[in-house]
Image (tube, rainbow, N blue to C red; front, side, top):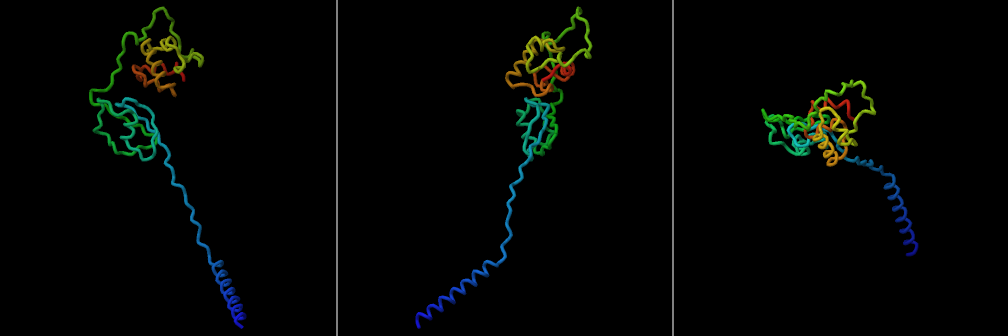
Length: 197
């Protein structure tokens, strides 16, 4: 009798356990949680010019400030005037940041006699229309003599172009030649149709 009672209790316990498992298995599952990766900030490009040692195009992460752009361009020149600049302002993609000079301290292009190309009375004038792509001077590969042949570029500036190229690598655009000491907007205007990269 004791054995029968034990068997009956075992069967009832088995049914109770099976019923419990049935209800647990039927309980609705919770919703799956999907974790999204944090969005990465796209880089922004800012053109820094004016009273900085290394004007140029710089990339920053979104949220960068004007001070970050000034630091990237090598800081401020002693002739910089920052009273009108908000150093804490956020940078925007495509922005041109102009660091002004103090009044009366704007840079003035000066040239030595070697840097100026004086016209030769024996040469016949040539038309700019006569220039073809093969006549363009590649500022990344040109020799001193080839660079010296450009208007407004004497042997001294030609050597500066080569030195700049050796120290900083090839020019990415013809406008990068403006970073060479002694080449300003007026000289660039004279040579822009004669050079290539």
